[in-house]
Length: 279
Image (tube, rainbow, N blue to C red; front, side):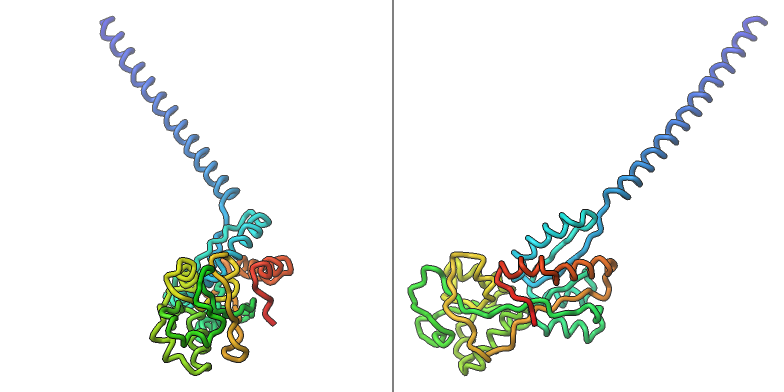
């Protein structure tokens, strides 16, 4: 009888111990989860940054790289994410619903098309910068080219130009040569790049005899030289409009960054890279 009582006592003692262990584990787990959860929330709250996606013309790559660092240094809660391409390609991305907060185009055409489709916050659109269209050759070129008219020469075999559908620099080039009266000649020699930086690279490497780019692109390298600016009146002014995308989820922060780009501090950086403030 005594043995039975002892066995019963041992059984209940084991059950009680197991229950305590499980309860302790559950409490510990609950505390751990609460702590971890709270820790993650605290980290997220303190460390998360607002991501502002900026779609910008390829010719802005260098200057915006510097402005990005300057702005993020002053605004620790902001993470600027730039995507560079031909303005037409960026326009298409916005039309197709790609995430974007701010658009900086190398021409009014693309911005106006988006505005007409109500895809931009119209009251934010502004003319931000002005650039120049120039003719460049490799730094070691021996062709002796000095003007846009020289594109008619037989020794010029290949001319780098931006794609006509999506690259404003290409569209400006066609307008220039059309107004000068010999686009038909240039068209036969044209090699089309997906953006203006591609054309610049071709000229740097000597893959083409010359190319039409923006002055600011030519200023980024010593591997090319500018031989001429587009003749006066041969094309419209090269204006870079900027504006907040209609579908932006961070419109206020995007507007704040756009206002910074219009500031005197930012304009000094733009001017360093060859841009001027649009009138």
